[in-house]
Image (cartoon, rainbow, N blue to C red; front, side):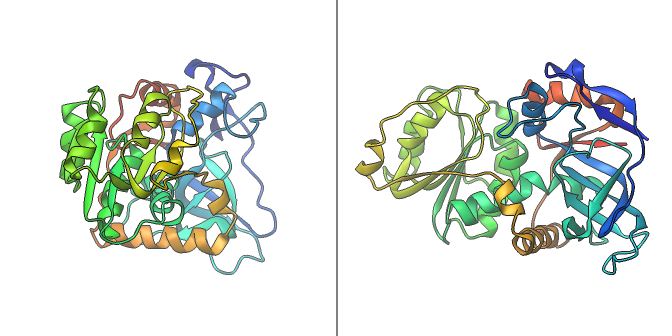
Length: 324
């Protein structure tokens, strides 16, 4: 089968199309013909060897897959050949086939297509649990979503509304991206390239600040985000796209009883019931039309290097997927 693999860390051109053996189906596993594989910023961190955990070489990236089951192990009873499924996996998604354990699989509703299903996994679960689990968002609270036109951001804006946020503030770097965030339900949109953006946040909240902030850039964005928190506010860090190591005085947190919380999706996946229940809930939101997915671009598997270039250049709106 064809797969995308890298044998060394580096720029997008280290991603190569290779022929590798089709995975064997072991006990408890199924073989899935991949129809769509999600592309994430984390995949680029893997490629550079800068992920939160060590990335072994050679490596086939891709943690989000949707597709059709083509083979099942004899002991698998909940799934059958022909089932449309979606799953999060450690790696191996940039390929024509992948072997997955049945505990990873969730059935895809008929109303949801493969690109949509692959788009909801890493970023949808992240947005969901950043708000609900780490951010402890409650009804009628205010939420600030940075990078609101990105994969996590577009979903977080909508999920905050679904969960009952009273005011969602979205930031982005261009008029086009801000218009997208507004169309998805953001009550206020602010261009974070403007030096006064954090002052605008406090202004639209009548000086109170916001209850929950989703932050993944670091550097000055992080520092200024702290200034936007209301009393007892929570800032959830789920990335460091700016690549900067940020220092701050923890005493700042005492001034308004605010919290800085870290989020890593891996720990959600370790709880199989929590993982499956939240995926099913997200798929239900999509099938019922409550949650709109922005699939920015669907590229052939062979153009994985282009996909990584687009993500790193911040030239994407919504989710990027590969179609083997």
